[in-house]
Structure formats: C-alpha cells, structure tokens
Image (tube, rainbow, N blue to C red; front, side, top):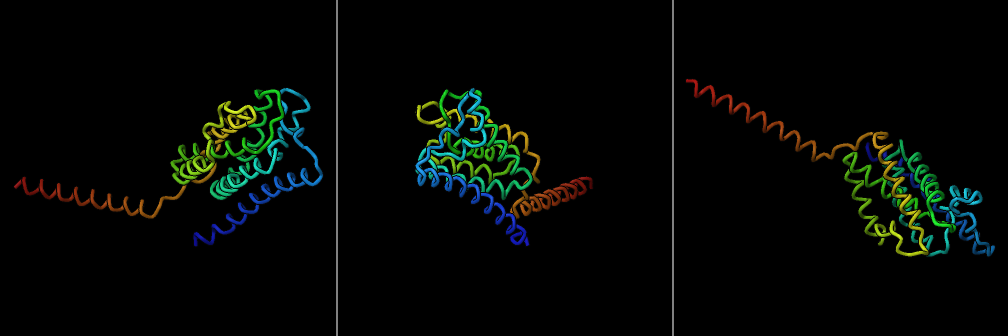
Length: 223
C-alpha cells in the first residue's frame, strides 16, 4: 500500500527534475548550434544589467563539461527533494535558486557568474542540515554521498580557482542552511522504521517484566 502511494510522488519528482535538466541542455545546444554566447545573462554584481542573472544565471553554462558536472548531481538532489519533502520542495528550490544569486549580485566579484553550481550547493546543504534538524538519516546520508561523489564540493566554497565562482557556491550553501531552518517543520516527520518499533516494544516488555519481578521480590522479603 505504501509503495502504491509513493508511485505518483516519484513520477512527479521525476517529471519536474527532468524538465529542469532538459531546459539546461536545450539552452546549451541552442548556444552551440547558433554560435551564440549567452554568458551576458549571468549575474554581474552591483550592475543593473546584471540583475537579470538572478533568474537566468543557473540556466547558462560555459561548456558541456560544466553542464555535465552539474547534471547528474542535480538529478539526484532534485529527485530526492521533490519526493521526500513534498510540502516544502518548491519553496526550498526557488529560495535556493533566487537568493543564492541575490547574494552573488551583492557580494560577488565584478565578472559574469553563470551555472547551476550554486543550486547544487544550496540543495546539498539544505538536505544535510534539514536531516540533522529533523533526525532524518536518509537526507544526511544522501548529502554525504553526493559530497563524496561531487569531488571538491567542500573546497568549492573557497577561492581556490579564479575561474570558478566560489561566491555562487558559498552563497548557495548559506541559503541552503537558512532554508533548512525555515522549512524544517513544513513536512511530516519521517516514519519510524519497523525495527525501531519492534525495539521499542521489546524495551517496554522488558521494563514491565522487571517491575513485576522487583515487586514479587519485595513481597517475599516482607514475609
């Protein structure tokens, strides 16, 4: 019964995720076939013309390698977000998407910042911290796996490479943490595993038996 209920959620999360990923690839293919450079749609900090990048920057990537490195990670993170956190998923996604770029526009270097890496960092950070706040081991585990698979995810928030927008990474991580605090109670708490319920029942039985034995021993001593 539980599996049947989960199928529509899985289909919806898959549709949303693949729709977003498809948009990223369509834009990149458009650039290649029309020989157009859309990097001017990135975030240009503290410039009025750079404000459009708050919406468009995550859709633009420098090359296929840049896009491919974000694609798999986004698929995993978005699928889990929209499946496991149904009530807050859209608010979390758009909070990370928009406000990470707002911070880049305010604090970033004077260069065009493009790519969905900020969204990646935001979602990883959200899932990790919301897992801690809600004691959800699945969110924590997924975040750690993605961090390991993504390579230098942790070091990406530091200015180690002038060609990489560490500001977008750091901004995404900050917004992801804030989103975890804001939306930690929006979705129902995760259900207990079956073995946890069984363990609780066993503990109750043992405690009851212990109390009975202790009472019997006191009665015998009174004689």
